[in-house]
Length: 399
Ligand SMILES: *Cc1c(COP(=O)(O)O)cnc(C)c1O
View 1 (cartoon, protein in one colour):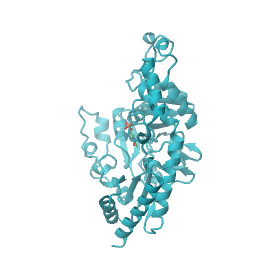
View 2: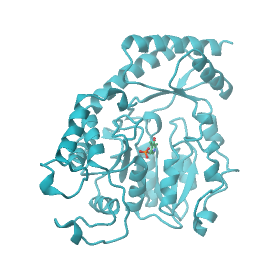
View 3: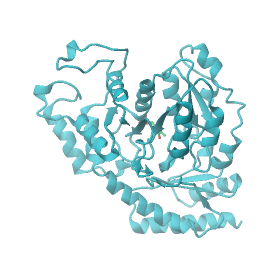
């Protein structure tokens, strides 16, 4: 997944252009910047690549989710549905706009189970947020049908799946709003950065205004802009955008490399009939940033992950025990440990996650092993890794 493996001349040249111009701010200073508008250029590149009318850059993926939710106007008393398997950023964004995060089960896609979503809908539900974890997507067609039926807005978190597609549409472009992260470990990186994309002009206008203090961005005189509503600062800098601009130009090459490496590992593991793979929805194409597979039981998954590590196969993860990505260890959410007092709507509205039944999620995530696909591996290294992984897992299965 990580674009950081392959920094080079292109990134350096882009950054130097910004430093030479002397303008690190994405707005204003028109006369000083020698025509350099890196954030705007990267937005244009994203619009082209993602086939959408609008892209807006922000300071992180978390900021992108927050701004996207602000666009939908969810707030106190409203519910946002999200999966039990995601990154903590998902519920952080929901809480930061004052809304209530409602976790629901994942299925064998390792993303939102449409049936669980439908069951969780109440009259307070406003947004459904599928999270395309580890390179592959939720069943977007089914989720879209549910959203349409109940008048809900879909915000796609495509932070881990940039470059994947569903029914021929780039991930992130299928819902009403889509979010990307360009943090240091994502497929393409700016160091820190993020973007949201949409075809909805009203959402776009809200997004660029909200993420820049509510300035309306009308006219050339920044000081004279008015404020249609309260905003915050979630801006990206020109330096970060410059790195992203070089990286997006390399996205399709990165994806090709990921696919090649993924396919070698997968073909090797496919020789073991007990190992099964995460379901990719029909008409979906992964971005191949991770290879995700199921062991027959949780016990065997635990044995396999230890054996992989003992045998020097790095970059494999067991998310079930991970406190960044899976609800079981989100104690700060379960205890609602907020620094400042929370609204009654949140205090009363967040379900008792200490006693919730997510056995369906446990049953899939407890058996999942995810292996990061790196860009820098040589073909020889991948083949060696494939052989080693297969031998190690086979020995676990036949113990
Ligand atoms: C990385 C990530 C985010 C947040 O992105 P940041 O840029 O690190 O704030 C959100 N959701 C998912 C699924 C992620 O992996």
